Length: 482
Length: 149
Image 1 (cartoon, rainbow over the protein chains, first blue to last red):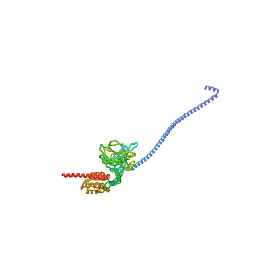
Image 2 (cartoon, rainbow over the protein chains, first blue to last red):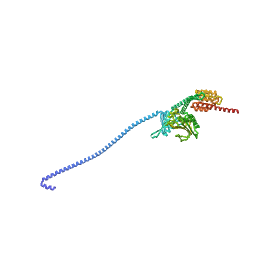
Image 3 (cartoon, each protein chain N blue to C red):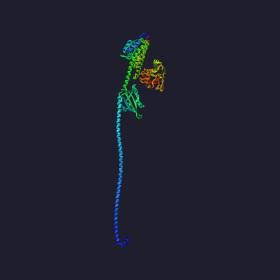
Image 4 (cartoon, chains in turn brown, red):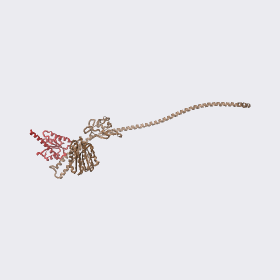
């Protein structure tokens, strides 16, 4: 190019010059461009630096941001957790508060119940003692304290028989342990009649008691409640009543005897009545008086039974003679009603010891009932036989080898719905009452009382309008003495 | 009566109506009757009159029948073996009376209201008779012994 430029210069110096100036200008522009480029490069470098720096900062920022973000999240989470915990705590606190309130309420209720129970137990008129299943006393109320003379301190925690002693009034021997019996059987037991309690000072009082087992849920036995009551006063009242009957009866007997003596004198002897009408009237007086004497004797027997002064004197006897004597005594009444009496007396293989008077009284009572409640022309069958243990006689299983005596009639019988009351004092069945005005309702009560005393038994089979069969047994082996 | 001589009976009873009834009936039956209204009177009469039999009530004022019998049996001036029939309605003390009657034989115990007048008379006659028989045997034995010696 340079060669080309020289040829053209020869052509024109001006053009060369112009070219030179242009070159120069070009150079200057190039230099300026170069400078600018350099400057630009520098700026770019600076920019890059700044960019880089900025980038680093951004990174750092991002990292920080991220870090911050994480922390924030964590904080948020924590806050949430805390809130939950706080909630829970609040709920627990509330619950606790509630429970505490309930507890204090319950405690109050409980305290009330205890106070109530204690005051109820304390003010109960009967003595109350409770023991656990080992027999250790856990409760002894105020009445029990005053009745026995023992303080609750002396009793509670010890076995019930440690201090409290019950004895039989009949022989002063310890009575059967009815408390142990109740706990053993799980059934309520009561003390035998005539039980005495020995007080701390040694004196004795008449008591009536019962023991009732305490059952927990599912019937588990956890102890026993014993209730006992001072019946001294009742006994005294009973005795006074019986004594009154006794005294009154004795007083009545004398005038009755006078009447019977004089009616007898009017019927026989040198000053007897003369006309048959007179005789008839006096005979009426005599028979009414005799009835009165019989009633007085019955009342006396009842009072003797109830006062416990019924003397029992068991002796080896010819019991058939006793039975025959009762039949003989009833002969007049039997004939009056044209009753047929069948006797089937069988001897025993063993001797029997029994109180003659009492046996006669029992048998006579049964015969006179049969006579009274059997219509004219009826039949009465009296039997005696030996019966063995476990034998079944007249619908009853015999408890031990005994003498059995029965009196059967085809009389009016006892209504079924009244049969359970037959041996109760003063009981008379409706049909007996309406058809026969005479009768105290004491005969069978006496029969039962006597047999209870001598260890015998009495029962009956009866159907209204068909008749009754009364049977009693007296054990062969023992002769109970009271 | 087997003997020609009248038998003497002492009736001790505080109830006048009964005393009269017994006395009349025994009189009719041929007895010579002595009456007393309490144990003390009865005891005095018995010792003085020496009856053949005594009918004795138990519950009486001044002295009761059991005490009277005891005093009579202890008395040395008179035969202790006179038969005594207790006539009472005092069934409460039966045992005590029976025991006492047993210890002081011959003595019998009857409940008034259970016995008719005629049966009481029979009892009394039988008691006198059995007592007299015993006495007769006793005296004949004594006579025999006396004759022998």
